[in-house]
Length: 435
Ligand SMILES: Cc1ncc(COP(=O)(O)O)c(C=O)c1O
Picture 1: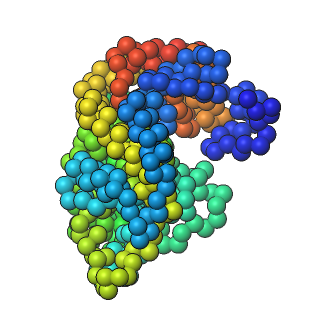
Picture 2: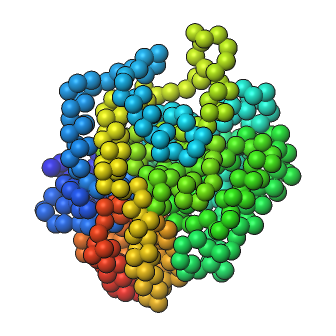
Picture 3: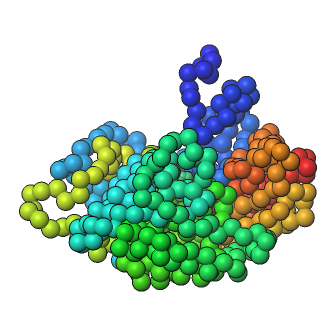
């Protein structure tokens, strides 16, 4: 154990609070973590929305170990290794129709910046070089790189970092508690919020807009669901104006909403899709962008010996990540995990909505195995009440996540009903204790 904790500057963490009262995880298996002292913690958030098949799954563990011994690294620029191709072939069997090309990255943030660059370069390749503008959405989270925070809409993630990318605008978010609070599943009201894109088309002209990026379900901002018909309408408006639609499925990908991808759950196919997290069950960092044939093929011209897309990472298609992802897909398939959230959705929704009526609970939202419980902020002290609930859950053996005053749940897809009950019991008791 480290003698002191000073050297490690922790990401997205209240460092001073943490170091006064550390929360350490030392081991994991299935639905649980254990602290160094051996205290069991039920994982209510799949680590960080990524360990969809649960922890330390044998096939994945073995695949990583064997891969490290066989081929530890291989360059992916002008070279390849068999598992990178095998994985892409497997992945496009799962993706929505037409998304048949896979570009590898190492994280969600890199996937987002890759997709944004692909969109702008595609528009140029097809002779529409004036389309450089990118449109995001208020409250969106697209990782922390400059492209991602530029199209993102979470003020704390943006305000410290200067002027960000030029030529970015945002459509309105879809959160409307006055009309939609305590909706079970998709909210009824708000499809017309997609028309906000028409406002930006009128302002900037479609000929300047390359792409729109949204999360089908906004996760990190606190689980905001798309109103019924909203994503369809966004798709229609994009088509009308030659604008690419990018779905950021870093959280929703790999079974979270009851289908392999939220695009399938909602019946709307984007032109580009970003993934990470569940791709390798969180075991080795890896992300990917799925691109339509149309986009990919637009790049495939010019002399054959020349690189078509000047982009990539040293660790794109890393052999350990490819091995982990292949074993992850096998585990998902063996256990039917990519559709399991659909089977549990009703039970999870009932359990979660049973928290309605507890002190300070002002909204509850759910889809598949994602839940959000919004609390009234402590007067003058935003985010404190939910943070206290998070600490209370931790003390009582449950890991949840909070953002602002929203508690988010996204348990591993292997969860059993008694574990759903336990999550809701511990969370409910914590909410009462912190009233
Ligand atoms: C929708 C979305 N996009 C991008 C990211 C960034 O992923 P990473 O932290 O792997 O860079 C996240 C992470 O939570 C996310 O939820």
